[in-house]
Image (cartoon, rainbow, N blue to C red):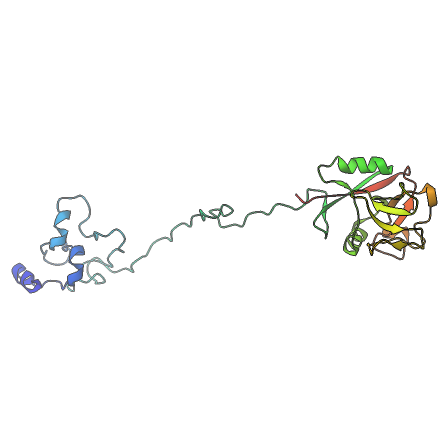
Length: 259
């Protein structure tokens, strides 16, 4: 059939693979050779405004170059030659399944764990060092006013003590007292006991303690706890504890949840 097509036109015909006949289009007249009748699959395109030299399949790449005697899609001739697919790269779109992505590809800005002015501690909580000097009860009220879950700090581990030792520059209240029973020190947020006795006392059930040397030593008149900074001259650099009267004026160490 293809041989007959070439003979009918009086010249040589381009060799068109059988399975590509539907996409075959004639070479326009005057483009470097005699025109040939369209293949059967191209008849539907007659009379349309579309460029007959374009393939019917919108997903196919444009033919390379112009017309030539070989009739192949990668031929050369008066139309020149070019590489298929040349042109600007497509603009990337954000991942519709990932709401944190954006068209520029920049990663989302993480939300800080603690608010401005607060410090993230090693125990998954935030700390705020309130430098205002107040009584124990006033300092505790100021911490609670910061929001739900906030109070004076209760220190239950050596990691938190070391963290406060690096951050603290003044004496500050902690959330412990033996006001309910002399020598029985408890954390007031949950009432858990951690120390029994004076300076020669013992931890309760292996609870963490960080008393300074000779502390606690005040007896019935010093029922609240404060942490000491390194500037206090203690040999313990990790904010050791000392008792003091609750009416004394000290700063406060507030502790609250992550955002």
